[in-house]
Length: 106
Image (cartoon, rainbow, N blue to C red; front, side):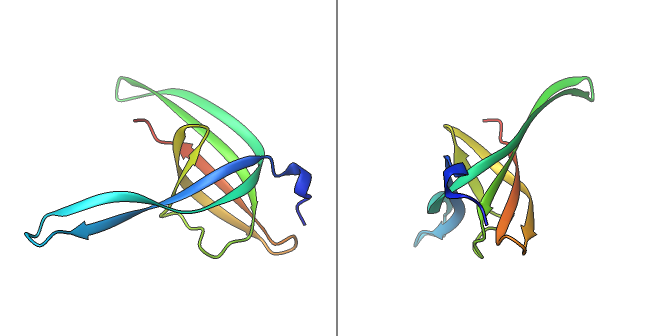
């Protein structure tokens, strides 16, 4: 079990929804699905060079209680930044999920 006192951070899970107008135009919008509390496991910043171009990759790992809706197709809003879910690791012993998130550069 995850002790309730360690769940200090609020994560907002969003999903991209496509809607089609009567004229056939398709628009994509992000809809908030749910929120949950999480414990931060670790933070990592990578600076590198790819094809003569500098990039910054910020990764954060969170631990949350198990939720069957969580998958890698969702995005997360945390601390006024948007993150994509890189991996979801389930731990059946304590009914939790480890989420590895990578910051989306806007």
